Image (cartoon, rainbow over all chains, first blue to last red):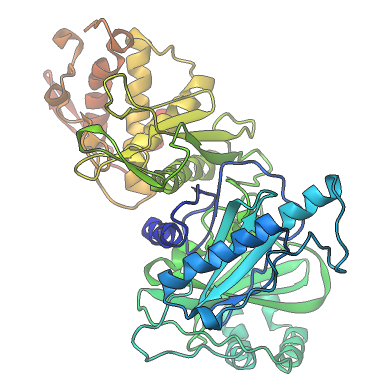
Length: 489
Length: 49
């Protein structure tokens, strides 16, 4: 499951930054951003987003006031024991005593300009194949971490990926085969593409990568464009095999033929799910559902957008009364609170929104409104965790706790689908949430939640509502205290 | 079944429609009525069509 990779990445980040207050901006893949809930307006590009070579810790760059430079030093110091890095192999480009400097080494005066520059400050770290970027606020507090998983080769039997020239050599002869029988990709046989690829191959670009874990696959994402046409071809970086070819919505017009190549690591079992969900007619372009697109477009934000012209809306997951510090905490009765629930909520709520948007071409309210999901850290008066979920008026609130048996509300696809449907019902049928109309609303929401696991997750399980733990039975309502018929009431 | 809490029992009285949905999908007999199954392929669309 993509979600599992996200959790693994989150655990990695937590290990690296044990005191960081982190939430998740993107899941469903191996590239994710982790940020605090602090809504800082970001200007400029915060850091590199290209494939990086495995190598010892290298600090790419950063700027320094004393406070922020100290934070950078602290970040590196935290990383060293986590990844077993020799402190002597790392270097810092900033002197903790330096004043705030601009790109020309001039001291930046106090004022708005300095504030802007501080927000842009970041630190990129390459750690044995993983890129980790940290961004700091004016006080030196880490407020964003971006990481890309490029798994370590722990066995020493590394597999080299193709160089760029080798990639073209492998791919270009296959273009006619890719285009064969597919009118939408027939333009791939244009000789100008071959000429461009040949010229591009002469540019030295050595994206050799090491990837040792079988579960992950390093792939090249090759965007081939010409005029107003664009194709996305996903190629196995190891052997040049074509995994997927799609006619996609062009991002911009090019008079010439272009190849744009980037690399990422994918869950081998989910390669097909990692391709952008793009309709050939261009009507729906779902940024979510694509490791590539989502990472590229939304890596620094706390929401994902379905840029559907008819209003796909956006989804934002935020902490709701989670503790100010710490990523996990103990709660009463064997419950554990964890910020990982934010990642779980993003996954489950995304599935519901995506399911709905793909079938109705609408956002939850048909107007493109945002959907906010709060992960709730509240406890009841008796100290027991608030273990519940509800949804209405563009919001879903789900408990931020994991129960003794591992179940949770935020991580339950069917529960989150149920709560999503309450939002839809609220603006469509407008069934009042009480008595008979409320029961009809609940039943419709139950049905939608159960349908999610059948269609979105491709498995059949619909005798109860609740993916991770049974809440209500469809076939035997009496087993959960519900009537089966009016006469039972 | 009117209850004091739960907005009059919305989470319990939903069982009536939930069983109806179950019978629509899987088929079966209940209360002297036999229901023909429509299967899961159409289930997700039926309530909204």
